[in-house]
Every structure is written in structure tokens, then in C-alpha cells.
Amino acid sequence: MSTITPLTTGPALTPKPETASSIAKKKLSSPWASLAAIVIAVLWTLPTFGLLVSSFRPERAIKRTGWWTFFSDPQVTMDNYKAVFGQDGGVNLGDYFINSLVICIPAVLIPLALASISAYAFAWINFKGKNFLFLAIFALQIVPLQVTLIPVLEIFVKLHLTGSFWTLWLAHSTFALPLAIYLLHNFMQEIPAGLIEAARIDGAGHVSIFFRVMLPLLTPALAAFGIFQFLWVWNDLLVALVFAGGGNEVAPITLQLANLSGTRGTAWQLLSAGAFVSIIVPVTVFLLLQRYFVRGLLAGSVKG
Amino acid sequence: MFNAASTTPGKLLQMLAALLLFAAIMGVILFIAGRLGRGKSGDKWVGYLYLAPAVLLLLVGLVYPGLRTIYESFFDAAGKGFIGFDNYKTIFTDKDELTVLRNTVFWVVLTPFVATAVGLLYAILVDRSPFESAAKALIFLPMSISFVAASVIWKFMYEYRPDQGNVKQIGLINQIIVWLGGKPVQLLIESPLNTFLLIIVMIWIQAGFAMTILSAAIKAIPDDIIEAARLDGVNAWSMFKNITLPSVRPTVVVVLTTIGIGTLKVFDIVRTMTGGQFKTNVVANEFYSQTFRADNQGLGAALAVLLFILVIPIVAYNIRQVRQSSEA
Image 1 (cartoon, rainbow over the protein chains, first blue to last red):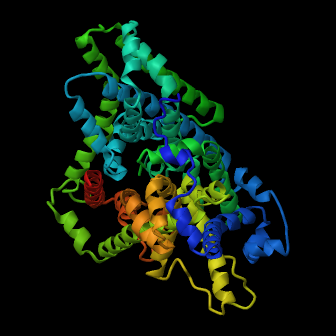
Image 2: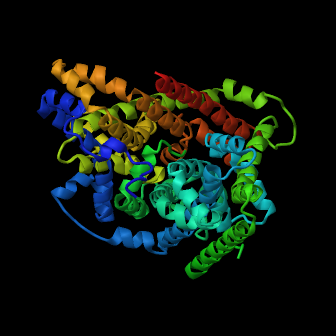
């Protein structure tokens, strides 16, 4: 692996003694620089912190006093979390949580697999029309989802797939492909041609090269895109709204949280706990796999 | 297996079945690829075979729908009668639609610049500090949560309680206003203030992205340039203006345009926080309202096409800037 490190940030990984900004900062009379950094950090953390504290306060307290009074009058309860998982009031977040998982796993694995073999073909096989096809797929990245939704919905209606997980699996997989193919192709190109040629001389075909040479080297790239796609699908609202319907059979947790915010906008005891239940998975994934996620970002692409 | 499952085991089984089906399809593709000859012409067919599933999905799920939507944008609300460019005329003349356009301009101009400025400043401030990675994670965390959850978090910040006797504010912003001696404001209802308050949510999410990318660019500035400047005794400001900023300029352009494109399509924040009411609507949310609420398919399609058209100049600018900087 030491010779092949696709998508590394280069200099960022090997710290240098001093950088332009560190000098700039030092001369920017240090206390002020630190103060500015702390102010930004606090501004960015406080909103989340306030809601997190609220999610553990009793309903009466949330509705009558600000969350900052928690520190003078701490009252802690788990009732809000029990309530969002309970059947009463139709919140029932557990079902939606399962739905999100059931949506996410295939919606990550399917495009990853399809994009891997496509990217392999683009990077290592010669065929007519290759450059044109690659450019076309690259260009599809800029097509906004909104443009495709209604005709895709009509196709699902014709196939009698509406209201099933299949709509979300297929839609998310398709929408992910242009970026996935582009990113994985960039990774694969960086793998030295010598490795592939050696394998071919040994008599390996494209299938065994793909599995024995490519896949082990691609792990960081697959992880980077996998996390991207996971966060994208888990956090998606638009695709879910159009294809999933509102019921607890298919709709993901973001959709239920959005509905809750729309219909019970002042039920902060439910909204605060609900928000954190929906956040916990992506934040955990992000914190555990931050390294890969940042590499993916630095590969120069973000989906939207 | 193509119907909705309603119990948790049922859902998990359906997922498993789908994954097995997909694995079987992949197996067939790889099996055929293994059988195809290994010569030049066999190679070619393996290439086409590997691309077939992705190309098929893209044609059915992206290319055809895109063209279809462009076609439908020239039809009336029911999608029956051809009305030429009338939907587009509506977007640029109707009073409500003009508010939508105005708000979208605010979003697309403000979000990228403020988020990038904050991200750049923060990246410089925490660079090489002992707490660098923890400090960065704090700013970056909002990137990993959904726009919906972010909207709930900020709606709570903006919460309003009427100014009566012993009613206390529970939203931090209004409490600060009261502490400073002001009267609480219905923050999400007052226009145009509310649009700017929604934009803050997007800035809050995107600053972490800007910071991460720019931080890597800052660390990539070559040592010798910095050393030379330092020997010349430049001060902090001119180090920033003459060394840091020019070095990261191409990255700044990429960050600005990426955030700009993302902001153009933002829909979740507006829908969750105000539903597009109180003059906060934007093109992406208006697309959803017209298509699914007002049942005006034609106008909805035209709004989607408008989003597509608006992305193009941003992408073109990005490509031109990247080309220029690689030539220089």
C-alpha cells in the first residue's frame, strides 16, 4: 500500500514545521486569534448543545423555561426518548429507524458494486466509444435530482413498485452512479499499470484481476464513497418524500422528523429527542470513519 | 417480494432478498465476463458488459427523465395542452414567483461567500494548534447530520414566545434580545429577516466543508515560499493577502462553486422551517409545491429545468477557473 495511496492529501498527512497560516496566526497577536477561534467554535456548537440538553429535560420544563436554566435547576428524564419510540401519538420512531437502515444498506452496496465494475472498464479496458461514454457520465453529475423525479415516479407506477423499498433502492442507486463512477475511476487510474500487466501475463482475466488486484487496493476509495452515499441516503428528504409515502412501512426517519416538525411544531420534547435519534447514526459513522470521509471530500467532489 | 412489508422481520427479509437478487445479477455478469475470450475483441465485450447495468440505469433513471421533464415544461398544469414558454414567463413575471427568485439569489450569493469566509478564517486560526483536530470536528459535525435535523435544531434557536407577563422565552436568540432589553420577535415570520435566518442554517452546515478543503490547501503551500516571505519580514496581513490567499485561490473557487450548487438545490431547510411561507420560498421548494401540492406539473417541470439551467453557469465558471490556474 505504501506505493499506492490514492486520494491522500499529500502534504496534509506529513506535518510541516510551519505553514503560512501558522505564521500569520502567530503574528496576529495570539490571544485575539484564540478568542476568535473559540467564538466560532461556540457559535457552531451551541445550537446543537441546546437541543441536546432539552431532549433530557421534562416536557413541562422545556415548554416553560429556556434550556440554559438547566444549569441552575437540573432536571433529567428519559421520558422524551421513551415517547418518540412509543406507539402513542403516532411518533413511533423505531419503525422509521429500521426503514432508514433497510433503505441505506442496499442503496450503498448496489451503486458501489455497479460503479466499481464500470470504473474498472473505463480505467483498464479498451473499447470503442469509451471516451464519449465517460464524458457523458461525468456530465450527468450536474443534473439536479428535481429534473428526474416525476418521470421516474411514472416509471415506478407502471412497474407497480410504488410504496415499496424498491423505489428508494433503485432511485438512490441510479442517482449515485455518475459521482461514484467518476471517483472510483480516478482511484483506479492511479494503480500502476505494471500490476495489471503482470496479472495478465500470469493468465488472469478481467474477473480475477478485478477481485484479486483491484478490490484490495480500492478499499479506502470504496470506504470513502460508501460513507458519502450512506450519509446522503440516510439524510435525504426529497427522494423519500416523492417515492416513499408518509406511512411507517417505507418512509425513513428524516421524513418522520420533518412531518413531526410540520404537524407538531411546538412539541419540543418529541422534536428534540427525535432529532437526536435521527442524528446518532450518521454522527457515529462520521466520527468513526472521519479519515475516509475527509479523503473523499478532498478527492474534489460533493454530491447535491 | 415487490410489495411493501410491514413488520420489521419482513422488512429485513425483503432487504436480504433484494441483496441476494442483486448479488445473483452481479454473479451472472461476472460469469459471462469470465467466459468471454481474452483477446482484444473479447476484452471489448467485457468492457461493454461491465458498463451495461450502470448505463441502463442511467438511461432509464436520469437521461430519459431529464429530457422528459424538459418536454413537459412546455405543457399546462395537467400536462395536456402545449403552451410554449408560458410556464417560464410565469416564473419571471408572477409576483410570488419573483419573490422565489429573489430569495434564491440571496441564498446562492450569501451562503457560499459567508461559509467560505468563516471556513477559511477558522482553518487559519486553528492551524497547528494543539487542539486542531478536535476543533475542526466541532465545525465539521453539522455536515454529517440531515438538513431536517439541522432545521429542527435552529427552529428551536429561533423559537418565539409572546411578550406577556411571566411567559419566558425558550429560544436562545429571543432570550438574548430580551436580555439586551428588546422585545421578542417572531423571527421566522418577519420578512425579509426570516430568509436570512434560514440562510444562516445553510452557512452553519457548509462552513465545515469549506474549512476541511481549505485547511488541506493551506497545509499544501510549499515551505520555501513561506520561508522566503518570512525572511522578508512580512506581517500577518500581507502573509495572508500575498501568500496564503493566492496559493489557495483555485481551491476557494472550487469550494465557492460547490457550495453554490448545493445551495441552489436546497429544499429541506425551507420546507422544514417555514414550509416556504412568509415569503421564504426558493426555487427548489417551489418546484416541490407546484408539482405535488398545487398539481401544476408544467410549472413544476419548468422550475426543475430552471434549477438545471442555473447550475450550468456555475459549473462553467468552475471549469474555466480550474483551467486557468492549471495553465498559469
